[in-house]
Amino acid sequence: MTVEVLVASMHQTNHGLLQKMNIQSDAIIGNQCDRNEIENFIYQGHKIRYLSFCERGVGLNRNNALMRATADICILADDDMVFDDGYEQKVKTWFARYPQADILIFNIERTASTGYSNPKVKRIRFWNFMRYGAARIAFRRKSISEYGIFFNQNFGGGTPHSSGEDTLFLHSCLQKGLKIYAVPDSIATLSDERESTWFRGYNEKYYYDKGVLFAAVSKFWAPFLCVQDVIRHRHGDISLGDALRYSFKGVRNFCKPVNRIEKETK
Image 1 (cartoon, helix red, strand yellow):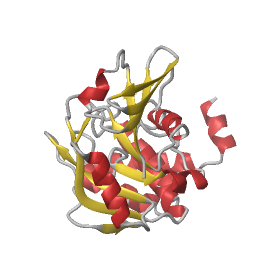
Image 2 (cartoon, helix red, strand yellow; image 1 turned 30 degrees about the vertical axis):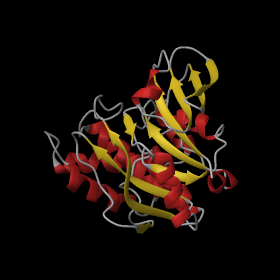
Image 3 (cartoon, one colour; image 1 turned 45 degrees about the horizontal axis):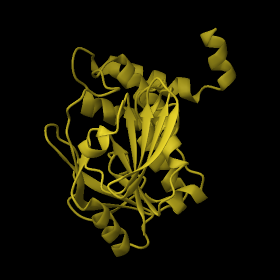
């Protein structure tokens, strides 16, 4: 069983990220920058591929790595993670323990902010998948590739809709019938040393983009998802009514036929 880390990064000018992230396995570094270059080399006995492309969008970045991956197990990562020593064997052990699993979602330790942590092994279903980000997911590459699952390139940092590519990825996996489990084990620490590439507060764009995301997940459940999100995340000067209005606007615009959207934007 082979393991490969797929890292989404930006503006890397050298290979120092490998040491910084404590990479101890094969890896593909998706480096969105201002040049086009592909490098292949060996780092501490592991095969490394640096994909430096002059383009933007986290979904596109992850897809570039995903379609070039070759390992049995792939781990999605961001460049502000520091992997634990022995993470490769830990991931192998968990997949061997759960041979029926197509995807495992691990914990990530955090040095500053809080985040959801799995207290025990549990099956991930349609009603509990939206709490997990991409940078804690490991999957059997064959399971993903056979169903042609990729990241939606209209969602996430550097795209029109500032987040949600990871949510839609997991949703696609569930729709295809893949088995997903959350496990109570950590494989890395999130350093929290840089600002979010997409979050600028609970403002109009945040609520609008959430409405679009929820509609992309389910047109039927989108209004209910908007209400629960606004209740949980209403902060600052935006009123409850305005937050709902922005969210519902995102739902309506996503649900419109394409030709109507084009006419309204001309």
